[in-house]
Image (cartoon, rainbow, N blue to C red; front, side, top):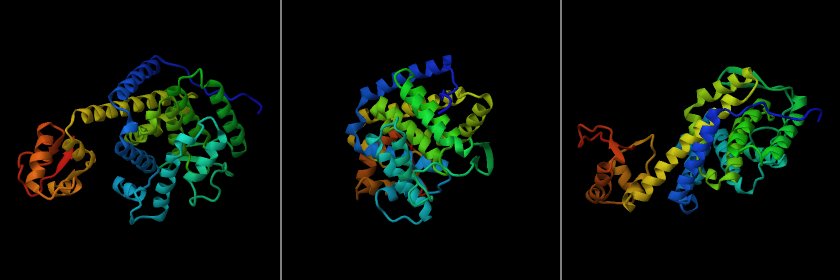
Length: 330
């Protein structure tokens, strides 16, 4: 390697403020409950991570379809998209066994992530690569011949910096640099997001089960815009700040979920666990999901308390008895 790889970034006041705030929220989340003791929430969040990361790459399967694939059910869809789900879930499940500072581990994980999808999974690209958002090429990646040198340099920098640079900053720097190098022919975005989660999980285990990818999906246009701005600026400052905001937001959502869970009745917990925030359900649907046959018992023990507590809302609040009434999670 001719020159030492040194990513270009500098600490800003906003970064330091966000790191401090995130550290506080991590402590609060850990104080509510250990996610280790909540297997259902862990499973749902893992599905959210897989679904969101693939949706960013234009996989059209819905959350429910992704869940069905992961749970072993038959799903009608493109075989390529179904295989992407199978691969991504296996890759995320391997997080506890991976070393985030091992380039070999990264290549092996890419092989899992792209198995049956590309010709040489786990191998660096052979051709030049433009990075696209939709039909628009947002930048050209470095020449192919430089990829091995750049990747070796990036991992060497991480190993040297892991005890000096805070993991929140280091993981975001890695994410940006990896996307910029674009070392593989396909799967770079998926790998960048998974590897940031991996780096963070070695700092605090709860990041194994925090669906950061869902926040990136919610700000997908900004995600690509900030990458372009950083390319023009010649440093990753804006991307680091962007990612720290997304981490801060997903921790706030997780904190709220855990706080509510600790204060809810068993019936309320059971009902909310069956509801997606972006979906509305008929009473009969929810009744089936919680395993009740009596609509009266369901309304008295589940629906009414959840409505009164402000945990769910009606889609037609001015006509509570409408046959078209649906209920959604707040």
